[in-house]
Image (cartoon, rainbow, N blue to C red; front, side, top):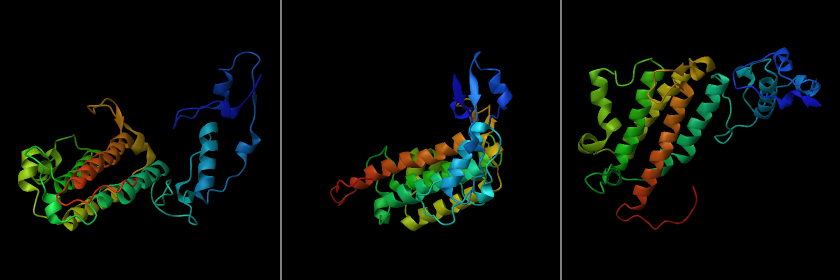
Length: 259
């Protein structure tokens, strides 16, 4: 029986030499090399980057070159993948984080809303759309402090808590204090917080991104998982905002168009 090298896979970041695989083979089974996997691969486009990375991960022989991982000839928000200025996995995640924000997130969900819309409270237990927008900025700020600054969760200075806790925790404090602002106020804060995130990501590498925090309440959790939560957290609250928007006084009937 002959098997190609591509029949065997290792977890991402784990590189086993071929001799290690040979020790695991049953008697009579031979490895059939894949010469095409060793061919020189140009990483000048995203397509060839993906192909080259697949070969590298399958064989466990090399790391992707982040400086050649960007397709200069094909760009746009829907071209997810490594980005210049970031390590390969961080760049890929940043492209996803940006897609969520720019293409299908809070910015689109709040387009053309007025201050009255953003302040509208449906009942005494609800949150306003403006409060949910600021909540996203607060969450991202706290994850910055935990992952980039290495601060234990909720160990922030008193002035930081005073500024961000009402938006982070919402509830009565958020309902009392988060109001009276137009959309630009919230969007500018979201942009400011995101720029800090991107600046800090440029300073980090994939080893940091995948490092486990064994003290995290969820169990061992790496920075990728923490930041994936920040991304999906925006998706969650964008859905809430979309629902609230459809129920605002004077809202137009749902056109039925997809997201």
